[in-house]
Image (cartoon, rainbow, N blue to C red; front, side, top):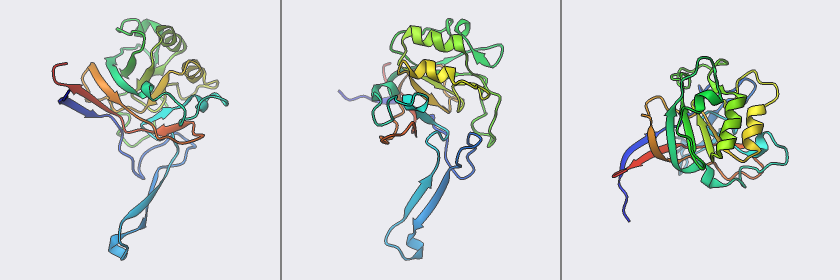
Length: 217
């Protein structure tokens, strides 16, 4: 059956040497190795970065030492039908009371639009941003979702000392996608594709995340 894409959104943050990173992480660096203009027969380049650079997925191994690495995760966590939903919070934590207002069902991939709008594209790393609180994470586990996506580079608050949100989600193998550029994406249902690289031993991977809506949906 031929399917026609009616809407298409690239929800990945562009990477460059100016891309802000989590404090202490290696900065993204793009380096040409050989270039046609210098007499080479082709252009070939290298990139250097943390696997948690901007739009990326977390593997269980990120917070669980014997957890699955990125080469072993279930790819269905990061593709398939998804729901983009706006969540309104009084403070900077998304709790159960906020998520309970949304139509979250078992097996969902939930991508959350928050008041983080603009933070991913202003060239600055922000330590204050909307993230998921403990009751929110526990609620998502009880709802048995397959994936959670957030619109800043941390599903957890910057000053967390125990990583409890990551632990709660990853122990149940819920896919985590951080750094989704949802500013211009209308609330709705979409087909998500945000596949991580098959990096053996890795605790995360950059992804090229896109949303599609097919004609007739």
